[in-house]
Amino acid sequence: MMRIAMGVCVAGWIGWYAAAGAQESPAAPPNVLFLICDDLNCDLGCYGHPLVKTPNIDRLASRGVRFNRAYCQYPLCGPSRASFMTGFYPDQTLVRRNAIYIREHVPNVTTLPQAFRGHDYFAMRIGKIYHYNVPKHIGTGGHDDPYSWNYTINPRGRDKEDEGLVFSLRPGSYGGTLSWLAAAGQDTEQTDGIAATEAVDILERFSQRATPFFLAVGLYRPHTPYVAPTKYFEKYALDEITVPSIPENYYATLPKPAVQSITRRKEQLNLDPNLARQAIQAYYASISFADAQLGRILDALEATGLADNTIVLFTSDHGYHMGEHGHWQKTTLFENACRVPLIIAGPGVSETGKASDAPVEMVDFYPTLTELAGIAPPPSLSGVSLVPVLHDVAARPRGSALTQYATGYSLRTDRYRYTLWGPEGVDGAELYDHADDPQELRNLAGRSDWADVESQLRTELLERIAEANRPPEGVKQIRAEINRNVPQPYN
Image 1 (cartoon, one colour):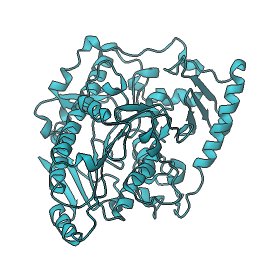
Image 2 (cartoon, one colour; image 1 turned 90 degrees about the vertical axis):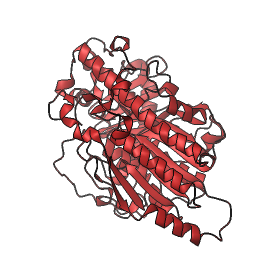
Image 3 (cartoon, rainbow, N blue to C red; image 1 turned 30 degrees about the horizontal axis):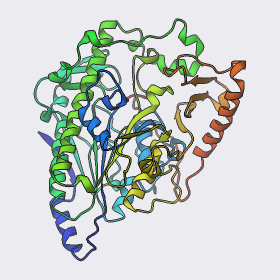
Image 4 (cartoon, rainbow, N blue to C red; image 1 turned 30 degrees about the vertical axis):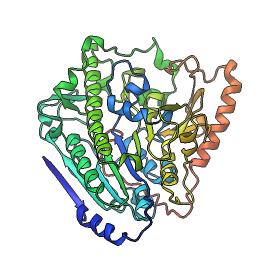
């Protein structure tokens, strides 16, 4: 097992904190356990998927609130993570590509874990929370923000050593294309298995101390390469897997930028059906493997007695295509890439085992977690608190969710998705009615019988875009372009 730890000694720091706080009030502030998978869509049991087996995520949903309409602000790892970790939109963080350290654009921003550190929480990171080039940066700090943490662990497992065994559509490339491996060995040898082991150890240590903690655990799966022990591949028979299809002449119904977003990776177009089924099998296997590691962490939370006083938030950085719209992976403005799983459980959640259909955003994480912990957030956050939904799943803290990618912006309301490409839609528009087209395959934009609906959505979307470009009060913005010649938009 390999792991690289940075920061002060956990045992020493919490021992000092316990002694220093011995005279404090017995009312303990809630802990926070922030769990995130990389490139995970809503192909989960608790979201109704007929094949994917996720008993541990399902178990968490049974004791929390599941959000059915949670959306990322940018369907790419770096910009999305910079957004939800600061509580600002990508046009405010100015992070719209990968391989960026957030403080290169917003040097004095107070991040989510940094806010908890400012209130005597011990903040820790295990694995990928900010952007990493995967799998290249596994075992390093990636593009981490050191101001966010007291202590960090960068696990590295046999998946890094076994890269030469990985099948890839582009030999020698792993993160930016479809690639997978049914691995030998045990869960605990994989990077995410090591991360879970480290998380269990930390929970056991903190159960013996009075120190409040903010523990963020970022798993790398199911990001490509889809690597999981063979037993997880065996859960999914190839003949049970259906490869999505698209209507004839489908691309002709879309604006040019939308077509470009789903046809950029030429090696992934028109995949052989057998190869496509293998890719889907590998993705599902990686999800079940990640679920098992999350289960180990959640089991430890229960076994240590910390569950009753620990807020748990589980999510992904964005959604993901597995052949829908003829596309694989991320970076589109369709529901598949924009929608994320979101479950919140623990103290402050009274609607346990229920689901909300309210449209919510990942920028809402910051004000939600700070309110649950009784911490005052920075005054200019763009998100809204979801605490009302945790008490009443019928609550609607916001009326729509905003996502952007490249030159496009997309608005998701209860019923519709409306997308504009280019300034004020000069490069085209898309309108989908989820009431009878949940797969978003019939573009209604420009049709006279939908003109009134489109006009209303256009007005709302332009207002949301203007709001998302508001300079955040008290946060310095550096607009200089940063390019490290890292291939975009994947990894």
